[in-house]
Length: 153
Image 1 (cartoon, one colour):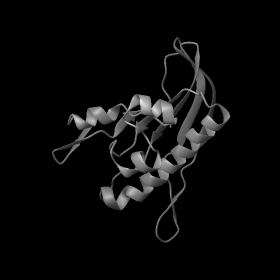
Image 2 (tube, rainbow, N blue to C red):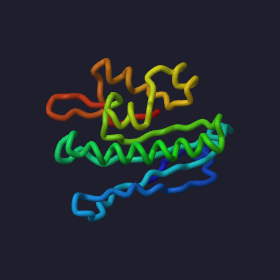
Image 3 (spheres, rainbow, N blue to C red):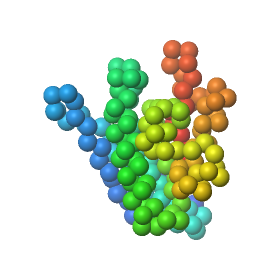
């Protein structure tokens, strides 16, 4: 995983990879992408940026959903660990989630909110892509159905 940035706007200070460990039914490790947490200065403000690409929908959304639920759980642990150390931390969570804003991985595990004020009050991630999704726009189309798999929260 990588973060591409313009050095005149962002100064990275520290980073850490968080491995997503998945196993198939027989216990064999299913290697997938890490989640990258970068701490730095954006426009002279401290910010944490999480970049990731969650497991694909290969084999169908329902069959592959448990892997994205695990990715969401890891993502939530990383976000919570940042907020535990710095309750007022500014966090940008972005990537290819391979799930829509209304899927369980985002709503039930990551606990995103489509309402900005609610997200701030409850210290949850605000997902502005939910409104985009509800207007039947998308970032990818599969079998004539639009999805918002690429998100910034």
